[in-house]
Amino acid sequence: MNALDWLIIAVYLVGTLLIGVWFSRRGARSFAEFFVGGRALPWWLAGTSMAATTFSVDTPLYVTGLVARRGIAGNWEWWAFAVTHVLMIYLFARLWRRSEVVTDVELTELRYGGKPAALLRGVRAFIFAVPINCIGMGYAMLAMRKVIEALGLWDALALNLPGEPRLWIVVALSAFVLVYAGLAGLWGVVTTDFIQFGLALVGALLVVVFALPDVGGIAGLKTTLVERGLGDRLDFMPWSDVAQLSMTTFLAYIGIQWWAFRNTDGGGQFIQRFIASKTEADAQKAAWLFNLLHYVVRTWPWIVVALVVLILYPSLADPEIGYIQLMLDYLPNGVLGLVVASFLAAFMSTVSTLINWGASYVVNDLYARWAHPEAGDRERVWVGRLASVVIVALAAAAAFYAQDIGTVFRFMIAIGTGPGAVLILRWFWWRVNAWGELAAMLAGMLIALLSYLPAFGEIDFGVRLAVTAFGSLAVWLPTMLLTRPESEETLVAFYRRTRPGGPGWRRQQEVTGLPPLQDLGADVRSGIIGIVLLFALLFGFGWLTLASWGRAIAALVVAAVALVLLGRLGGRRLVQGS
Image 1 (cartoon, rainbow, N blue to C red):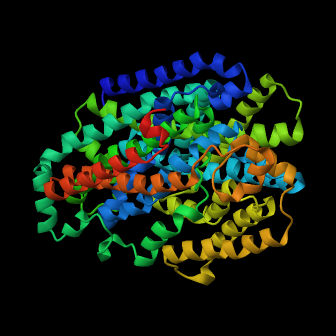
Image 2: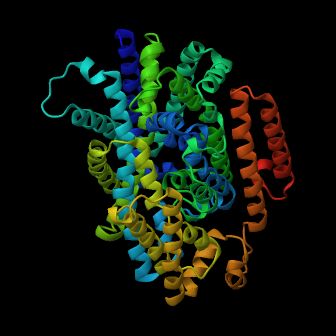
Image 3: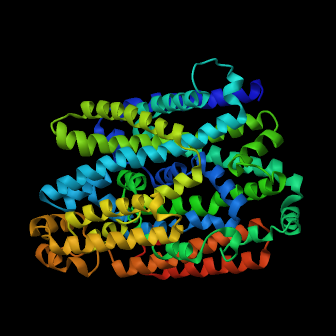
């Protein structure tokens, strides 16, 4: 890296801080402005922010390591979440915007009543704000630490500080992101997300452009892989042994994860964007934009880079670093600085969201709910900033001790499996109560943690997910049926606010005289067709990228048919633009 590279990085960092300062006044106006943007986000900003949040510095490294070890089919580890994310568009986006809560856990005291609801809200807020959030933020910091170490940036700065260098790397990253996110509030976060997503995507494309010619382009890439006996790395489906994805695990991803994982109805960061959107239609459009950007647009640059790494660096001890090695070997000065800045952008977009999201739980669902309900807006904003400091400190500790990004990712999936079915049913069935949801969350987490004990040996990941999901079901279902249902007053108030569809609220519909604002049957059908559309686009663009023209055309024809069917479904507000 030369002076030009450092100048580009410095300009980016200063610009980001200036945006944070610019939005600090708006964020300080009120608690709602700081954490939900005054409920005024346009769909294109909310959707891009959702994509930027999931595009962290860890993701290209994670995908590079995944493809190097297991081929393209290894990506089913995260492609499987597309089922959940498409259903989120039609089943939940509008409901969340209609609820007008500040955080997703606040919904617990709207949906349930009494002490069980209060207990559930407090437990969920703590678990998601501290351990879950900090581990997630920690592995993003771990990836950024790997990037800085691999690029030699810390050595280039020639700072002689005591102790372990990687600790100082994490401290420096933490301090910078904390200043930026603590000042900006949600508007600053989503605005920089929009810029950072574009920069991060350009960075990924630049690595492809400069490295791909050295392996003979796409044709040379495919030929070389086949000649080296690595042709199975090009398979999209995990039928070969190289994918290291047993049929049990694959079926668990497709058949269990969509209804068992804790993000089945959106997940905290996405829900925050839905709640902050201008309208219900904006929330739904944002969800579709996220899916297209997340699965169709940015998947293939990462995969192409990973396949190039497989050819050029076949003996790397840590394949995740192959992405960085390509940057060092192929990018000219100036471009290298721009791509390093794109890594910083990807990292900051994720961590800033997690800081703001975690702090919203601490303030709204712990401090203002339990410690000081009378706290004014100014006090809540400052408590949120203080909570940000604590959350970042804990995340930095997680980043210091973690080593492998993929391992942490799978661990997060495992401990989050279990409560998903309850999170879906609570919207559509009056009988679900607070005790059932609490039992599902705690049982799933406990079963997953127990499965990692040495006494259980090595367990297939799909088996682990199945045991956790159905073990949790065996706990929460009888717990729910053996405890009292929620009061009619609570159920009527919830229905009046959200008005979900389906037969599960028939009595409340009769009591209030209010028809549902959701056609559940049509939404389920739209969700199924939407899943076909998204996977057809994902595979179609993938085969186009890899010059498999016949397969690409077939997939895009399927996508076109699915799009027509969506357009013909009555009441599809998003397709009709209302």
